[in-house]
Amino acid sequence: MQLLRLVGAPLLLAAVVWLAGPQAVLAAVRGADVSWLVLGLASATAGNTSSSLRWSELARWLGHRVRARWAIAVYFRGVAINALLPGAVLGGDMFRAWQLHRDGCPMGAASLSVVLDRLSGLWILFALGALALFAGTGTAEMEILRERLHIPEAWSTAVIAAGLLGTVLLLPLLVLSTLASAAGYGAKPGGRRATAVELLRRPNSFQQYRRQAAASLAVQAFAVGALYCAGRAFGVVLPWWVVAFTAGPIFLFAALPVSFGGWGTREVATVTAWSAFGIAPPLAVAAAAAFGIYALAQSVLAWLPMPVAEPASAPNA
Image (cartoon, rainbow, N blue to C red; front, side, top):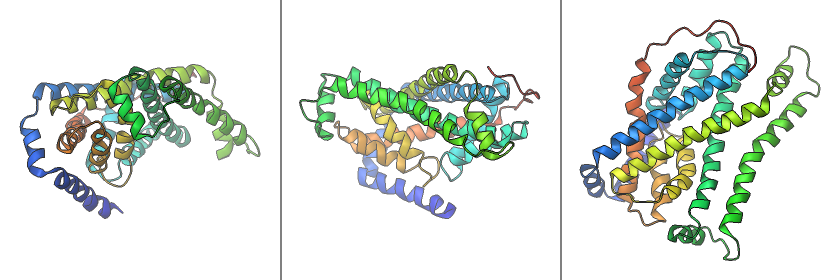
């Protein structure tokens, strides 16, 4: 599988570039606006920094205190692993869980912190996409989107957006409460199921839910901003709400463990999503590739010195 990813990702990327037109893609790259590229890199870096702080907050809630500097250093090492090695986000996530465990956090809590951190980001990304629909009400791009999705004229965009947003925001509460209840049946003291019950029934759960929602909103706003800037660098002029709405499938495809660094899958998703709004494939390919290069550029931050985290577990927030 690792060999398939190493071979498949470049082949998929090459196929997308070939279909878009190598000369057209090269022309788009040559005409790139460097100022937009730099702004996009700054936004992507701010997003990953915010994400590392969100993860450290989650680790504290699970009972293990870590310094912000430690979390940032470990997180950017994970970014480098995701960008340079096969496995999409899995390698970096496993690295973060392992480092947290090495620091003294129980493996169950360390793994759960990474899983919840990843789900938190994905959850709010789609919530942000639902919010974006409100901004697009009545625009020409919304009419294109409704036509592509075959939405009946009688269905109000605002009602659809409100329904999607409510579902996305309430579903995690329903899932976690169900898991906490189900995990309690037959749990033996000291066993894995008992540990799951303890972790899922941490105090101040609702407050942590709100903190994670706010932190993830900032993270995804920076990520969408980076994608928007990458597009503007190559002449892609789309409303911000369109970029925010399409970022969900684009980022989801990039995270699939079928390549490395999201190469190939991210470009396919971007071309597919943006072509509906009249964006030429060469421009979409160039923008998606620039977004991938942002991750490669941030890999140098993996050399940040990693301070020793606080040795003692913290009381619950």
